[in-house]
Image 1 (spheres, rainbow, N blue to C red):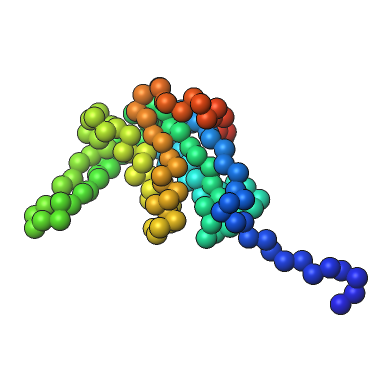
Image 2: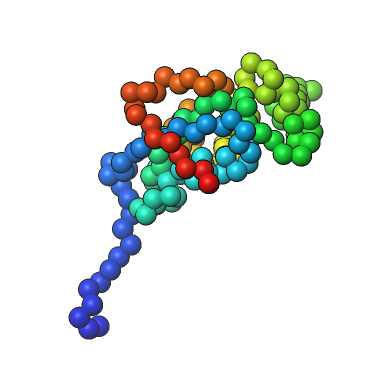
Length: 150
């Protein structure tokens, strides 16, 4: 073999991961591009020790979620569906109604959720996402850093 040492890929262990808090201002940000960056940070793909089966990601706080931008005519034409579980229980609403309603943060939440794994790990990652419709958040004690989006 020679004088070269045997090198192995190192998997991150859950207790070794250091978590950082980031804050993102969604004001006039395009929804899909914002959600992609948030999902990457939640998953931990921006870190060198990324391991697919371990939660290596950081916490993300999104403020001004109600002011997110949708391109084209998506605000009027993008449709969200939900089902009550009963026959005939399918309900649909447009992005405009959701953004103008009391739960305007759900647009960002659903966009990020769709970009995460559909398993127990994805649900754990989604718990690290904190979304607020307005400019205030209760996480000042965590000293969040501004997340670079561009």
